[in-house]
Image (cartoon, rainbow, N blue to C red; front, side):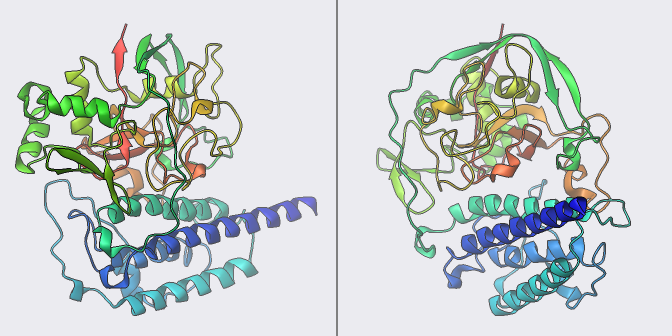
Length: 444
């Protein structure tokens, strides 16, 4: 009886997490003025209206037949809203607003899916019930929840690029006042780093997080803080964007063809640099982490005579300890809270890179979770023993193309559940819109 009660409690907890994730996505769409829902703020992505339907279509396509035995009621929309886009060859979508259903129609589709799923899930809660692929309902609910929370973050990237006058401003974020930043490097001794999840464990992870393995990492030095806007401004003033020797061939061609001459979050007014936050333009905050593409980060690292860290180096600096025991988080084993970093939707924008001293790693590296993803030099590829999820084969495998790069850490808009040590994020090297910064390393 106790086991059944525990299973039922776990099932209810999953539904509560799903409901909370829905509230977050609903709140995000609420900042878009209705007349702008058909805008495309980022040229490489769908119009906003697609994502209103996509989150529910994903849940429905994942759950309705595979485990719940529900019949589709709008198969055309199930297909229309099934897949996002990530063009890698420069091709951009050409659809027009009139090609999409009305917002009212899409919202009706969303309500229908939520009603059907919630009715079935509430009546038949058994988180250990397995699909025909052998995966539990609990695992699929975790997939649905984290997929939605990922989009709550990536949609923030998109809405960040929406003109300021087309957004409804919510309550302001808390402010931070930093002390002067003493930039330095931290020596990380050689040691073994643990990566990935064991299939024998009970922790949820995406397919690219498996299988658990270790790697030897030689001694290296890493920046104590993420590179700031002030440091990157020095790179710009020293002609970094115009120095051909700092850029790889593909990166240089991209920079020239797209006329990239500064971070996408910066704008210039006369001789003054401004920073575009989610809801206003402000003088460039010099102590915030700079958000740039991987190409720009790599060029800066070359200019500084350094490199970007590998995934293994970043992992060791963040979670390693002098005694060889891996921490659950950089600061220790205590669950994430606002004292440790800028994450879990606490703010809309970055904070100073030295704003969270309590989040320091065992080696003394600051800010490795939250406040901006961190680019590595590691091309996104499978770990040994990789097996794609049969119910979502393209989640990772479609991006093992040599064009996507691993990011670690998290941003202000990253949910706490995705701050686990094994979580891996990735984007194309020329994508500027991510809340992603970097820090550099020196080999000893």
